[in-house]
Image (cartoon, rainbow, N blue to C red; front, side, top):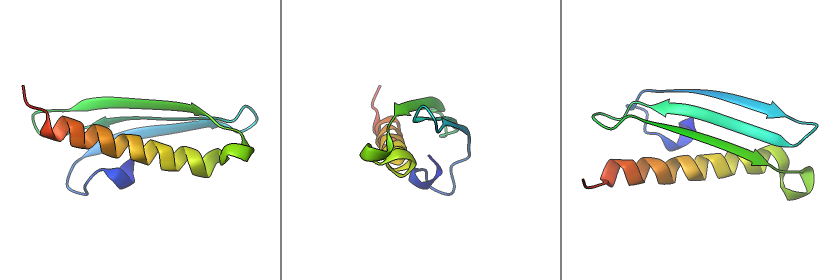
Amino acid sequence: MGKSIPSGVPFAHKIGQNIEEGVYADSGIVYLKNRPYLLTVILKLDEASGGRDRAVKTMNELSESAYKYILNYEK
């Protein structure tokens, strides 16, 4: 998730993986000023679909989309 969050925005995250089952997870709290949010992504990918590399790419894409949405959300 970190690559998709600007360097000035604090965040904390924890990753997990079960390689045998092809399960990858990343959960993070993004401390966006006045709009903190939590994002959790869990993926099941086998090596044929890209495994860990694909999981990391997908998680970064989802994190970037969530960040942009929250940043620009109008109440």
